[in-house]
Length: 140
Image 1 (cartoon, rainbow, N blue to C red):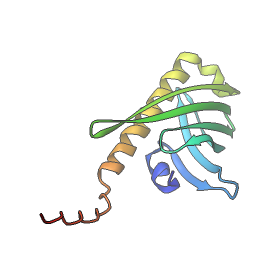
Image 2 (tube, rainbow, N blue to C red):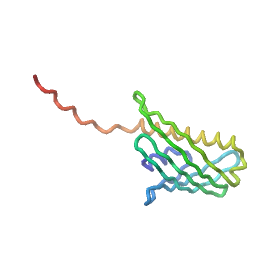
Image 3 (cartoon, helix red, strand yellow):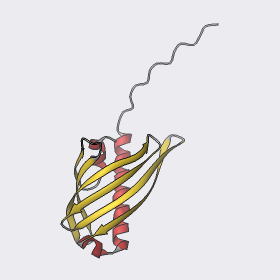
Image 4 (cartoon, rainbow, N blue to C red):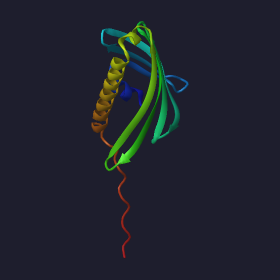
C-alpha cells in the first residue's frame, strides 16, 4: 500500500499520493490506439481485509474522457509465492470510449500485466527484514 512503490510500478503514473481521508490522488498518462491523454483521478481502498483481499474504486478524468470502475484483488499464499487474482468492471466515456471495447480491454490488460511485472521486480529486489534469531533449544 506504499504509494511510492505502487506509483513506480504503475505504467504512465507521474504522481500517486495519499490523501488525508486515506484515498489516493493519481496522475497518469495513458494511450489507447490514437487516443492519448493525461488523467487525474482518485483511488479508494474499500472493504480491506489485509493481507487477503480488498476492493478498489477508481475514478479518473482527462481531456479524452473519463473512467469509473471497481475491482477486487485477492492474495493467497502458494508455496513460496503469492498468487494474486482480480476481477473488475469499468465504464468509460468521452473520446476514449470511441476506440471500442476490444481495444480498451486489451489496453487495460496490458496496463495490469505491466503493473504486476514491475511490482514483482520491486518486491524481488527488496531485501527481507532480518529475522530474529531462534531461541536456544532446551538442554536435556
